[in-house]
Length: 193
Image 1 (cartoon, helix red, strand yellow):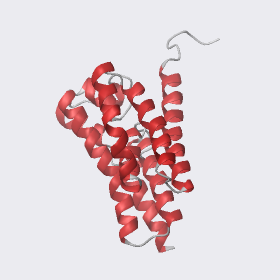
Image 2: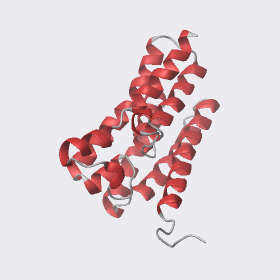
Image 3: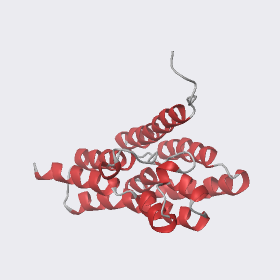
Image 4: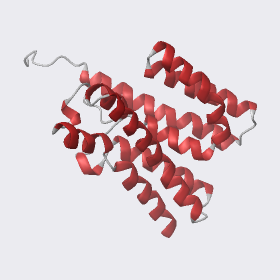
């Protein structure tokens, strides 16, 4: 029972609405009403300023790291550690503090994977930053990150469960992005039939 509290802690930490808080403090605006309405670092970067967006990115990465570190501190079994990671992303994407809205969970996923597979993530960091600087496209850089991470994990002989986990979390991010973009792109004000 106590171990499942770690999963709940992961959800609560993930739920802390970083971009929402910064939007309210800096602009007195709700980030959900700015840009694409996403409560993540990418929308914050465009709507609240580059420095603020980068700061939010690193805070959201830390939000991913912290619950995994806490679970490890309490010697939780791997199943609980992995469940805590999923709960953390769920908290970030569907925060209980802001009507179950949130971001896509990308930075939070990076934080989780940074603790679970640091060597793999550090190997792919260089190429990912190069793509980001050259192309200035977060979606493309994310694709490079998560695809190359899968290959590096295989190359380093990372345990199969972590290879699968390193694939499953980005799928959650991608699906969240897909459904949010579909929702945003629906025609508005077309009238009802």
